[in-house]
Length: 74
Ligand SMILES: [Zn+2]
Image (cartoon, rainbow, N blue to C red; front, side, top):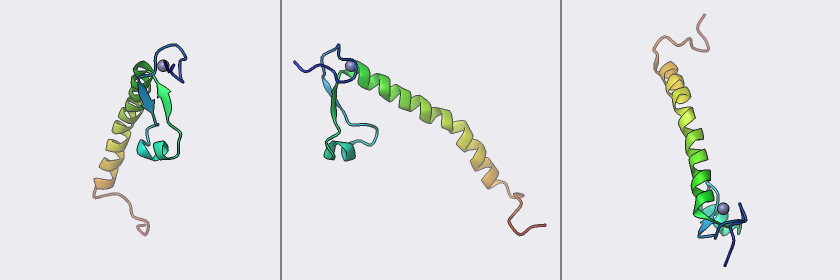
């Protein structure tokens, strides 16, 4: 039985290859993780990305605004 490389407690049922996915798998960085650790990490990433949404929306709004001062405007 393979034990999770992350928590060393539960049975490893998944391969964790990082958020990059296949690329890391190719480079042999895959670890045996339990699903609990995989889901926990994925949730962490999802929350981090979700936190960027309002920031990006605000920036996009700024870029769409017609009266943004250009580089050469006085
Ligand atoms: Zn684990």
